[in-house]
Figure 1 (cartoon, helix red, strand yellow):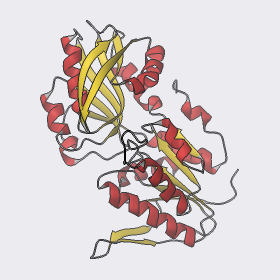
Figure 2 (cartoon, one colour; figure 1 turned 90 degrees about the vertical axis):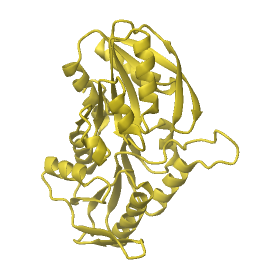
Figure 3 (tube, rainbow, N blue to C red; figure 1 turned 60 degrees about the horizontal axis):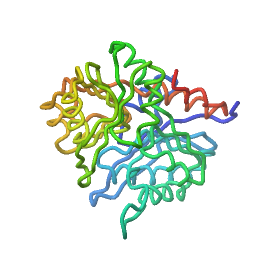
Figure 4 (spheres, one colour; figure 1 turned 180 degrees about the vertical axis):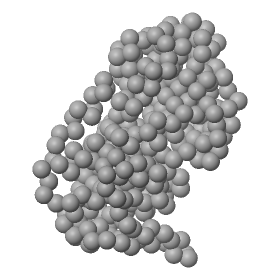
Length: 317
């Protein structure tokens, strides 16, 4: 068991999730002033003693992404200089994860750059959920625990949808996730073969698998502008699917996303609260939110107690 106290702090990216986690752990959210000076510089002042503490800093990659990333870095530096024993960055949604490779000449690998920044300020450990690419864990020289949303989303699917399901991956990269869900749910599996036209713009081209007469569940790690979801819905219905729903972990929902969802034939979009819903999205009746707080709370408790968290990766939980 750990012999030093646990303290949880949060930046401004997702205070609601941070408070839910603290409530489940039955500890108060740490006091910290996180604001800006008049010129826009991040201002941080920790409001309590953290010397020798096991600090967990909850900060997601919510909009505005760069401001919240800078808050994470500055707060971590403050904890390090205040002599925290260990600092774990709890990053429910890891921003810049889509820039994880050089897919054309003269472009950066920004996911690695962000990893270097987080490590360089003194972070000891990372806790996150559904990284866009699992290989990003290798960008860090510190332990990374990448939780899955399956213990949250799979029970929802079991409770709200009938047995005649087909789990649909919107791209080849998501097939392992979709296959795992399909096996556990005893559902069919399908793949959308899509061609990406430009950034945030994809055209669904073909469906591999049988969807006719079935309830289709599109499974993805994130929904940004919702272009893929809307096009996938149209294509699945054209191929005879009875109705289409979607389950995604990270509800970015930027730009025209909510308008696209509301005007599409997508029946529902189930998301977690790794990111707070933007005001327009919170009023969309098609969007349902299930909380990741309990999963993060259990992971934080186990990390603090130096217990294994391997059971939290079990897709059957």
